[in-house]
Image (cartoon, rainbow, N blue to C red; front, side, top):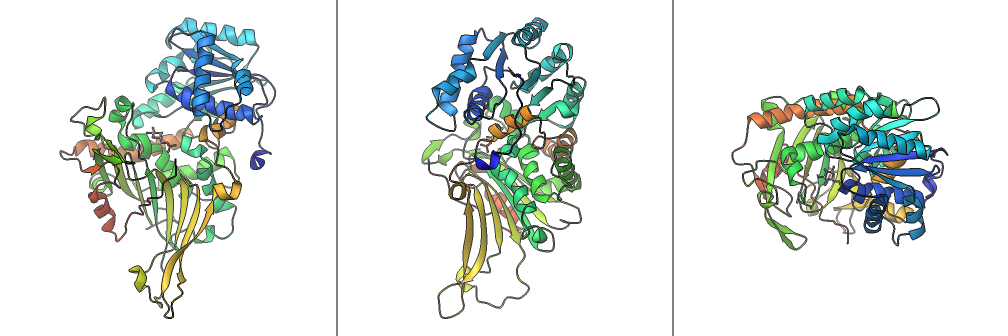
Length: 505
Ligand code: BG6
């Protein structure tokens, strides 16, 4: 695509993409389909060896068949080009080993040596319980980085389950890799429309002057999913929506929406500004955590015309689970730009639609001169950033309708990615994997960012744990959440923007 044409490339020297946990879902659904798209578009300028590392008794052949199946099922562009798949997978090899077996790492090194590769990207696509086993062994056996080659580590979420475990993980990783080698993935940052938040704000002259407490009344961020916990109950029940979505994706969206313009657009300057936002978020301690958050769990209901079970009836969820699948929060950012402006955020599973959006709501004009009677009150100007689906941006405002008396109707100006660029945006992983190969960490979370996000989240978690709710509020699957969450925001004379727009298919 034209707007990528100038992007840096991974160079020409061969690269080994070593995937720990290659037999898992992430490799299948995300990593290989993304590598396939990159190869199809000619972005893998260096020969890329895919080295799978896992316990199962697989051979190179079995590995290739499995990766191929993943590509055919999950590739973004169809039909899949067989030659490209064959070419990509012709350099796929398998190392069979458990993660705590030194010998496996010795064999991995022998393989890298025989292939003549010294640029190595180690990718942790395993459950977090295996991270330490792997990293400690990489400490002994990883390829050494020098001036002629690079060695990087990619870490998936969850990055710790609270502040302490995140710090421990940091210590382990930093004993082996330096910060410049570590790429912590938050796949929301790879979404085109999430990156567009910064382009909208800082590549245009008209929005930024209004983007502050003088003109903005409040901001609303929704990350709603229609899916339930699926097959991940074991993990999800110990995490809840606060660890699964809020600590990472949601706080990242707040960071990008609220940050100051970086001095230059590079990894450290962008991340410096995001960290400042996280640091300025007013901590929620004690009573204030209860006043400013709301949690709930879904019960059975209808999603897309299908009856779905309640959370407690999902496979693998304890029947007495009090894990929250929905949360809302009111957050204040105590800095010069945002003092006093509420950020209402919510995220959850099994909601009424799959939608991620950021709504910037502007203040009303100082005088009310016109008759808004048809609308039941003046509609505020909103700038809606549709992150997914229906990627685009909408501005709502009032216009005179065609009646003799001056009456006003709410109308909208709309930009759609699909219409403007004629294609759906690429998958987040395509961008992120290319960035790791190129060594650009702008879209990855830095150490201090993860820890600050945990600090903020941990305050809420602590209070929630102390105040174990006996009757966790519930909401029916397929609805927009519990009525209590509506009351939560109504206190401030606000309401959630519940869109029913869903993408066909
Ligand atoms: C993941 C969460 O990080 O993000 C999942 O672990 C969630 O629970 C997913 O479903 C949502 O991602 P997306 O890209 O579908 O919005």
